[in-house]
Length: 156
Image 1 (cartoon, helix red, strand yellow):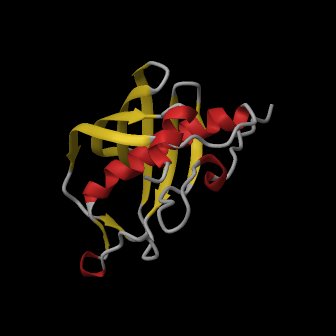
Image 2 (spheres, one colour):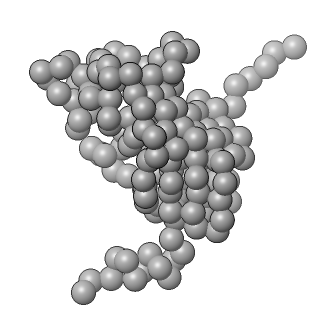
């Protein structure tokens, strides 16, 4: 018996971000309440710092946020909807090992929904390299309704 790995849409399809702020590379696995994505550290990343030959570990919170966005985008894609626009409201207890994300590393970023209502979600997120956890946080995210988003983006 052969098994096939599920394939997922490109990350460009799942997130409303455009280069250079599209930071994650691909979805590796997902279910209804959790997702795993990969980030390959490259010098072309907008946050790359030549002095440290990598990316400072505090950028990990944005990798986590985009991973959460990819989960929302995947749900939207499965319902023939465009990816929603969401906002990172905050990260609680962001902890990292203090190491630099170095060029060539592949980060495994995962997020699991802990609780949600119609527009707010709380996620437990982590970053691993070769199975070792190097960062974690509780992420609070907000996806406004279309009416609220229109108000937020209206020119004043």
